[in-house]
Length: 424
Image (cartoon, rainbow, N blue to C red; front, side):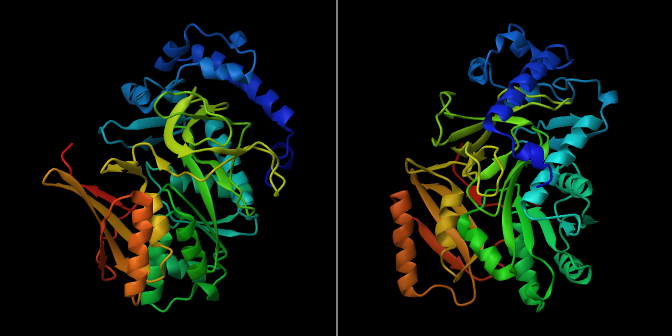
C-alpha cells in the first residue's frame, strides 16, 4: 500500500473524516467564486448532522458545469490554479476542471495508491500510453508514478510499433492505457513477431472505457499480464478515483477524498447496498472544482463496506457496467454494449473488434453486430450457440456479420462501439 495508515482506517474513522471534510467542503463552496454555491445557498455546514443528511442536498450535473463555461463553476480565481483539463461533450460545450497545487498533489496521492494497488513500487518502470493533453489520463498516470517514485516512460498515445519497442528495450514492467488499446498492441505484436512474454511486462492498468471480464481474460492470456481496472473522470479530479486489487472483488474508492452514493437513474432516490444504479460523487478535498453530489452517469453498485482480502478498508463498488447515455434501446429492450462484448469474447474465433449498427428499416429497429474474426473464425456449431446466447440476452434476433481482421477502422482514443443510424 502507498498510504498504509489511511488505506486501512476503520469504518468509524473513515466516516468521521468524511463528515468533517463534507462540512468543510460546503463551507468552502459557499464562500467561493463558483456559481454552484447558489445550489446550496440555504444549506449550512452545521446542518449536516450525519452522512445520511447528504441525500437531502441537491445534485450537481454536467449541464451545471457546462453552464459555467469557462470559469463560472470554478471555486477559486484562475490565477490561483496551475493547470486544467477538459472533458468534451456531445453538446459541443466542454467542461473545464481547473486545479490548484493542492489538487495536483491530491491527484498524485490517489494515483500512487492506485498504482500500488496494482502491485507497483518505486522499482517499476511504467509506460504511459494515454495522451498528454486536454484528456486527463496521461498526466494522471504521470503524477501518480512520480509520487510513487516509478521510472516513467511518457510514450503518449499511438505509434504502436514504437510502444512495443520501448516495452522491450527499456525493460518496462507496467503500462497504463485506454482499455481498448491493448487489443491494438496485440494485433501489431502478432504482425511483427513480438512476444510479450519475452519482456518484463507484468501489469496493465486500463481505464476510460467500459470493458468486460471476457476482454480482461483475452488480454491477460495474450499478453501474459495482470490487468487492473482504474476509474475516474475529469470533473472529479481525473483518473484515480478508484481501482480494483488482486482480489478482484470490486473497485476500491478512496473514501477520505470522495463520498460515493448509488441513486436510481430516473428518480434520484438513494439505493441500498448491492442495488445497481448511477454513481454520485461528492469531492472532499478538491479546491478548483469542489462538487456536491455530482451525477456521473456511470452505472454500478456498492459491493461492500467490509475490509477486502487485500487489507484495504475503503468501500468497494462493482466494475462500471456502462453509462446511462450508453444504454441502448432496440425493439423495446434496454442493454449495454459491454453485455454484447461479454458474449462475443467468449469465442476465441472472434477478435475484440466489434461494432453495433442500429437502423430503423420500414418502421422497425434492426441491429447488426459486426465483429472481426480471429484466425479461423467460428464453426457452424459455434455460430448457432452465439446466436442463441445473444437471443437469450436480448430477446430478439440480431444479424451477426463476421468480417476479416482489419475491417473495422482503428481510431485513436476510445473505440467506437455503436453506430446508431436511427433518426433522433
